[in-house]
Structures are given as structure tokens and as C-alpha cells.
Length: 232
Image (cartoon, rainbow, N blue to C red; front, top):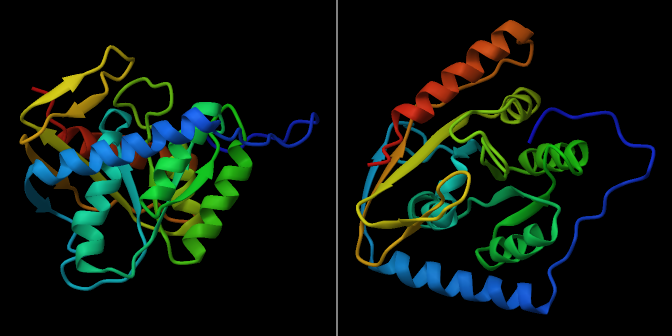
């Protein structure tokens, strides 16, 4: 998601809803991902010092687009396992495919916020800020939905600056996976793989940050994300 643009004079963009086959696909994705996740051998490395000690501060989780397959399960198995009261809202495209993914989020008890840099961006940003004010953790793929892969865009910086919430870099490495032939080489976990999860030190964006400081912190976040990302 990029920084807000001026609203279009053509009127608000209404997020597209999934049709019956999209809803069926969402249910299948939820079932398969939950079943595969139950077979994985998990290992956690938490460099945040935020969740083990009972801190209740909501944060913005930052995860690469190609690692979305396990993102909701990571939140449930690690964060909610330690703090069951925590809830999440996540950004999803306003497109028809986004409607299907929004239903997947709902099945995992995650609030979908519909929008992207090209469609409904300003409204989605306002909704994410509102969710953060209600105490929800937020989740964004900083290189989605079109890339470039492993490049942090400015949207997450804007969100962190507006909300005052810390950005938590998150990634994982799978010992066995499929890589799809997409722009980001999307990773699909295989049953019984080892999954090594990394949560990096948080990045905070001061509300009064200048354009130069925003760019420095964007580059710092990107460097931290790449440092905890292994693709071999």
C-alpha cells in the first residue's frame, strides 16, 4: 500500500466480494493450511521482547508477500498462544481475488481491511488506523501486491507514523516448500517441513519524522527484513 492519494472524483471504490466458488476456495485454503501447519516442526526466534513478557502494545507485523501462506497461523500459534486477547486486522486487495482472501482472514478470526496502492488506498489507510486505535495488531506485506519483491514500499511507513505503532519485521524459512511461478516466487509449505520463524527488533517511525528520516527508516526496515529472510 502506498501513501494516500487524493480521492478520485469518480466516487468511492467498493471492494469486490467473492462469489460462491471464491467462498468455497477460501474454506479449502483455510482447511489445507491449518492441516499442513499442524504437521510442521516449529522453531521460534523472537527478537522483539514484546510478547513473552506480557506487553499489550499493539504492533504492525511486516511480512513479505511470498510468505503469506503461514502468516495467520504464525499469529495464532505464537502471539495469541501467549496473549489470547490479541486480535489482528490485515490489509487485503479490493479486487475479486481479495474478496476470497478476505474470507480466509475471517475464517482465522482476522479483520480484513480492503485496499491497495491502486484501489481504495486512502480509505484503507484510515480503516487500518482506526483498527489500530481499537487495540488491534495490524499486518501488511510491504512489497505487495505487485512488487518489486523484497522492496519495502512507503505505505507501511505512513501507517506507522500515523498510528505511533512499532513495526515488527517477521519472516520464516521452510526446509521443504513449493515455489510458485509468480512475481514473488510465492512459497507453499509442504507437510512435515521445518519452519524457522524470525521476529526482528521493532522499527519505530516518529510522528514528526521528515521525508529524509522516513526514507532512512524505510531503508532500515528493508535491511532488517532482508537480514531475517533466507531463500535457500
